Image 1: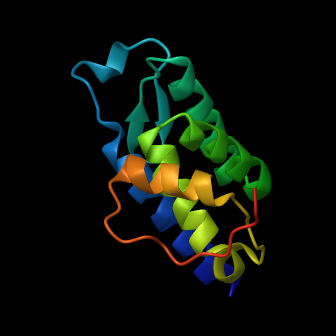
Image 2: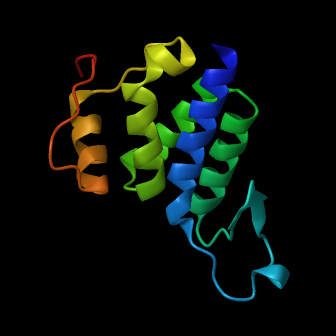
Image 3: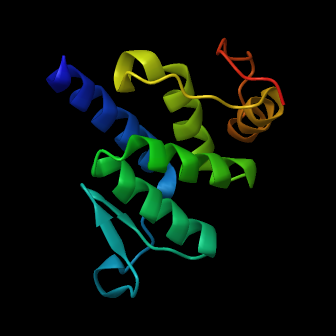
Length: 126
């Protein structure tokens, strides 16, 4: 089960990072961070916080990572919104944890990622 969880978690992370992009000339870009085979070049404070959230996630500190992704998702950060929604939706199966979010947060994240159908997740009241 642990191996399956790790593989699924890795797939989620890669899917979440896939849209980060790689500007030309990455090799010498200052502040660039390599996450697996994706290079992230922080351009804003939110990008720097995202890289830190990814590090927490990769280190298995899922609760701390979810908290960071939530904060960024609340601010409209696209990749964090995707990851926060996936962690919320698959919390029990992948992390043995029931994540929580307010209905307004879930709606904001779904709007950010362009979800056309609301997710069916358990949310706590505001």
